[in-house]
Image 1 (cartoon, rainbow, N blue to C red):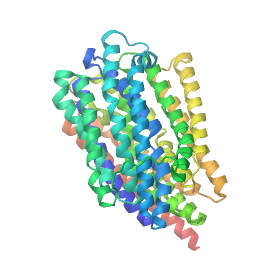
Image 2 (image 1 turned 135 degrees about the vertical axis):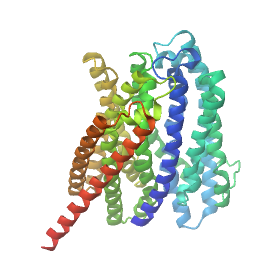
Image 3 (image 1 turned 90 degrees about the vertical axis):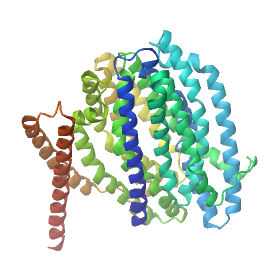
Length: 514
């Protein structure tokens, strides 16, 4: 099973890396076309990122994580019983319910948008306010499309089929890039919004052939009083509430950022999206790959295997995310310069974005492990505990944000630091409660210490070499020299990290032999 998770995670990770790399180009083109701090009118990215928040919130609340969390365990029961006919009925009943709810919600929000934007971005007025309202209404089409696409992904997840599942986000980003390159010169941020809709359609269409091959056929099946549908709805409740806590955190960040300075929302989103590169490649990929395996062990009540799989998955992610976090922190200026600098994105934009990116990396390990621990609870058909902890993390984030930003005048840095603290809190308590719940050790503390030691020596080596290269290479004005510099630092850092881990493992084996 460990090999299965690794193969699936590796496959998903590679496609996630491809998607994130395409996302890097998306961020580059956005920065180049619009900049961060000096945008005006329909060329102000603050309006786009603010408008994106409401459709994204609708999708995240009702669909993202919720569908797969409830659908996969139930559908796998039908697979195990070899009763796919009932499984497909359950799928169609759930899908039709989702479509009705999403259309109704989107129409309702369409009329509420003017009022919501006044609350979400209180400093917006004139063309910024008008543009944000229009963009939000355009992009409200995307959560309807994504809701159908997400159920298609969940079907593939249940069968452990990940190719089109993983390809879909790549096409989504390509759709947005198309909008930036071909529509934004004339229509500004409206062109980006149209790209979002195009990307959402591509995200859905690419998955249809696979779910058809797996046996799915759409039917107008409305039997929502089925036992499995009712249980799914009851399980969705805590999950939706849990996601609402996360969304309130994001809304709070947007509201406070809008009050700081023009471009603060854009800087926050650029930095967050950059730190999401290792998060998506590692944390999300392993959580998706391990979910079906954990669900199988939970259904069979094989708790030893369940704990062993979870412990192994957490250790594997830590082994990779620790050096990635340290490397991203040390190379934050170079990363931002290479990916975002150019066009309207100037040195001032780059400096503040790099600072915020560095703060985000401090909580990257927690963000990467939370999805895995949450999926473990979902495989146990327990969505209440992740919800409660998300709620407490949200309250902590809001309180800290207000204190650090407005009392201690830390500005955007205080906002991000609050987010980091809330994620670490969420991770620690998820881990502790799950361990107590299972009454089996699910976290290897000794392994964590070994990884941290290796990361420490890697950090020293990378920083020392970085200082040497800064003193001997004029990389600020030469893009290719800067690329070479980062490449050298990554290779040396990897050699130090893996070499250190090899030595520690070898010494550990000798001690055990004695």
